[in-house]
Structure formats: structure tokens, C-alpha cells
Image (cartoon, rainbow, N blue to C red; front, top):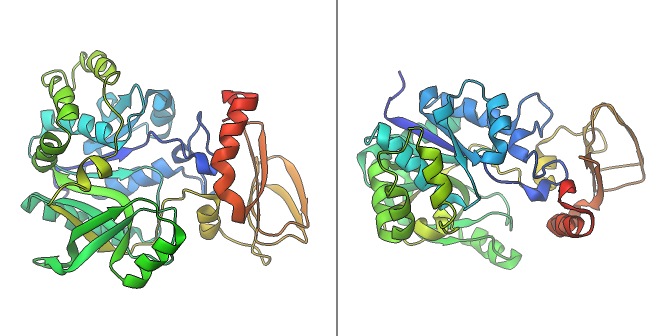
Length: 364
């Protein structure tokens, strides 16, 4: 039987520009079947957490632009479970908003917060880790995050340094956090891996409502004070007007920078459940099925000749012929075609900016 005090907040407001043009402003990657298996990433995420929390305790925080997409893809949600942000303000305000909605219903809640667009290979292991993490945070006043055992010096992930000499009593996989580092340069990432003291930051958090609210009061009092003004309005018809008002003055800041990097009760759960944030074409390529030439293809009418190690994503009914390409991205969506060396994919963000400036926002 599931614990009625367990809640989940799924953050689904990002754009995912590095997977452009597959992911774009109108349909970000969390609402796309990026692996071609019939389910979108947000649907997969919801189903994973439905194994842990009662479905009625799962909340989706997203930009109001994506209200229709969210309702279409997760029709089982009630209106109150869809938390709509009028503006993008990064992860700290979205978490503060969800905290106050949940607190109004259940002040004894223990919450897991997770992105909507990650891939998990070993779902049974993932469920076990989250259940143990929620149990830990229901019994202690720690801010718990998930760290992934790194397999390479990936510069697209944040890193968490942990204290091996300070494991949590009763769980040898949970340690005190020493430092957080945002996406490092390659040489620094290599030194992190070599030291054996660092984990990838998965951006998944667990805490009790009481513990995280104290952290907001201590480290982000301005944001906490804004949302605290709405007590008595949450989960009522007056909530939307209040939120639309305070988001205009709420500052943009991440939960990592605003709280986790400053707190002395931050802990990390070292785990390995086949995790990827699917943030790049290379990450997507790594997870897809390959042909005998190591090409990963989504599309019903794609023909490849003398091509290898390419990631190809095409509309279902478009006939596409590719000849002579090695290690390329070839993708089309929303009247945009990209043909780019996979090794140069860090340029995709710049392409998005240039297209928006030169051709208009409708293409990004």
C-alpha cells in the first residue's frame, strides 16, 4: 500500500533547446516520443512515480503555454494537479509554489521533485532508491539529492562531491555533500572522475515539506515571503490571480544555487539505475537501437547509403535519402532541417539563436 504522505512534483517547464529542432518552444522534448517507442518522456515519468506515490499526489509544474499538451498527455490529472507558471523563473520558484500547494493539503508531506524529461533504464532500481530516499527524509531533516555514478567525464552534467567518511547511519549509499559544481570544462571533469569523489547531479530531490520550507526561509527569504502571502488562496479559485501577480516580481534562481549549495544538511544518495537527461543528440543516440552501420534512425521512409554512426530523426511519412555521412545529426521538424556533425552539437544552441534572430521565433 502506498504512503499517503508521499508526494511527487514533476518539473515540466523547460524547452530543451539542445535537441532542436525535434524539441522546440511549442513542443519541448518532455512532450515528445523521442525514443520512438510510443510514449512521451512526461508520460514515462508520470508512470514511474505512480509506482511510488498515489496518483492523486503527483503534481506537474509547467509553463501555462503547455497546459493543453499536459492535459492531452496526462488526462488522469485533475485541474489542481497541474501547476501553471505564467513565466519561467527556474527551479526554486516552481518548487516554492508546489510546496505551498501541497502544504495546504498535507503539512506532513514528504516530497520527491524530479525533471519530466529523463531516461531511466532500470526502473525497479529507481523505484527502490526513491522509496528509500523518501523514508530517509521522512525521518530526518535532510535535503536529499540523487547522485549518479559517472561513466565518463561528461561536461553536460553538474557534479556533486561527497564525503565518503560521512555516510548516513543505516544507509551506506547516502553521504554528506561537500560541493556542487555546475557543468565543468573537460579537464576539470576528468579530474573529478579520477578522484572518485564525484557523482553526476541528476537534479532529483527529496525532503519533507517542513525541512524545505525552513531552507527557503533561511536562504531564499524573498521568494518564500512572496509565496507565503498566498496562504489561504492555494487550491482555491483565487490562486491563479495571485500567482500571476507575484511571478512578475519573483526573481529567477535555481534550487541548486539558491539552497542546495548553501545548506549544511544537504545529503546525496549515490545510485546507478541507467540514467540520462537526454539533453543532447549524442545522449539520445546512445540509447537508441542501431543498424549494422551504427546508425540510429527514427522515421518510416529513411534510406542510408555509405553512412555510419548517424542519428537521424525524420517525420514519419517523409522519404529521406542519406549518402556518405559519418557521425552526423540529420533531423527535421517544424519546417526546420538540421544537418550537423555530431561532434559539433554544442553549436546547436547558437543555431537556435541565429535562426530566431534571422528568420523569426516561429522556427524555434
